[in-house]
Amino acid sequence: METELSKRLGVEHAIFGFTPFPAVAAAISRAGGFGVLGAVRYTAPGDLARDLDWMQEHTGGRPYGLDVVMPARKVEGVTEAEVEAMIPEAHRRFVQDLLDKHGVPPLPEGEASGWRITGWMEHVARSQLDVAFDYPIKLLANALGSPPPDVVGRAHDHGVLVAALAGSAAHARRHAEAGIDIVVAQGYEAGGHTGEIASMVLTPEVVDAVGPLPVLAAGGIGSGEQIAAGLALGAQGVWLGSIWLTTTEADLHSRALTAKLLAAGSGDTVRSRALTGKPARQLRTEWTDAWDDPDGPGTLPMPLQGLLVAEAVSRIQKHGTEPLLGTPVGQIVGRMTSERSVQQVFDELTRGFERAVDRIQRIAGRSAS
Image (cartoon, rainbow, N blue to C red; front, top):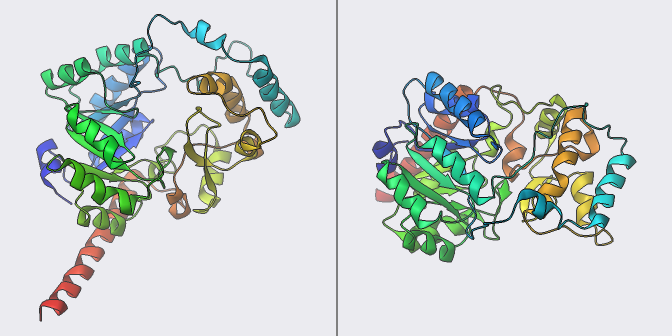
């Protein structure tokens, strides 16, 4: 699965694996892909440095990258406390009533929320970059549009390629104009924040819109055959996220959540604003149903929703409250039916890719004759 982009980055397979787990990212790189560590949950620079140190020791010298969540619009001069003060009391009561209804205990005394997402704030994202550029990362990806021009320039000064996710051809063109090196065309089927266009339609549209910039196909991809389809549509690689959640190296902190993922079908996800305030595909649960109920208070805009629910999500995960327990995941969850190592996933992906290529070659051979 080599392409011009994979050769440029020095990886055997043009498989870019996004994950919040250092052990998974390192395993992806060791398996011949390109591991990308998600940084959004690192609010302390020291924690990110610790895990990047670990990555250095466990990637076997293979390349890897970092994914940040840097907002398209700057948020300056506003503290986290000031932002939290904007959250209506009625929304706080709604969260507490939902937790009480399901008997979710509080976190143990002294234990802080482990889910608190503040990486959207300008100073947090920039502090992550201050750490990251001290390491030999080869790719910086941004999940919220193009990074500010000075960040793109700084990355290029360090020899780091910059990638950004796009949900439409127009979005991709803006990335190209901003000097982005790689566009990730993320379709509607993907986990997390997505647009409205499905991958089969989106990928060739983005390829046509930004060529010759390399494009990665994302959303609903979890087999070698689907990788082959993405490359046939003009992509130079694929961006996979959900498929790694049930690998043995992943650290979901909850066997109950792993069990829910393994049991879920492709129709058991929903795009909901319940988690962050922006539409994000995730497991459908009683938590998402409550927030999407028209009789409820409705979700708050990003970042207020994420700050509002942070402690609640940590409590749900800590205590494994099954009806409310969920996670961002794409429609590919229907193929995630067993726990496998990252290497086993790669072995299956490469076999499926070879089957697809052989099938197309046979068809092409018959057509030629």
